[in-house]
Length: 217
Figure 1 (cartoon, helix red, strand yellow):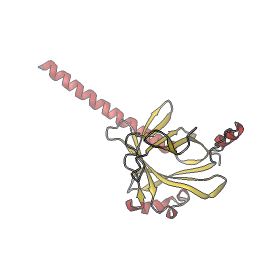
Figure 2: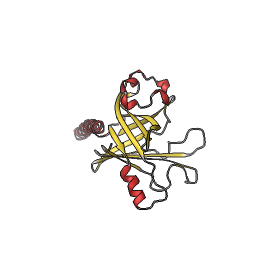
Figure 3: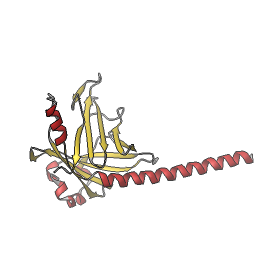
């Protein structure tokens, strides 16, 4: 009986130690995201490479701005993310909020993507981040099941949504796939939707990632 008790105590201590270690690692991950993610990006190099290879479906030239904001209603680590036409910066293509937190088991980082119900109210928020202090939950929408799980390995983050749970809004049953990669100098993103037969119905069929480099603007 003593041997069993010792083994149980040892296992409990080991589990406790692993849990504490996981928590510390996730805190490091959140700090690394806070350092790496914000900035001004564009995909000029990717567009130039497409043109040089005479690619038929050239990636659209996009300017990407990401800035940390204070939006306590969402979470402690939140970012405003805006994409604009790089050739006509006044034409904003999309606006979102990214929120990051540790998963309940401390084994990964969870990202929630929020869309604005009235985007024009928050346009060019990267230039006036204080406006997000007043944001409330009714200003935003998100798709349940489309949270991304982020993991850090080989000196980069990779984030992906669950193919099983991330479905398009509206009852079509389309499966949505979101993928992100992050390094200190690059941000890559891909978003596609698939029908029940696996055909791409939204997003790029080939070379789906938009590859943004920081600091070119």
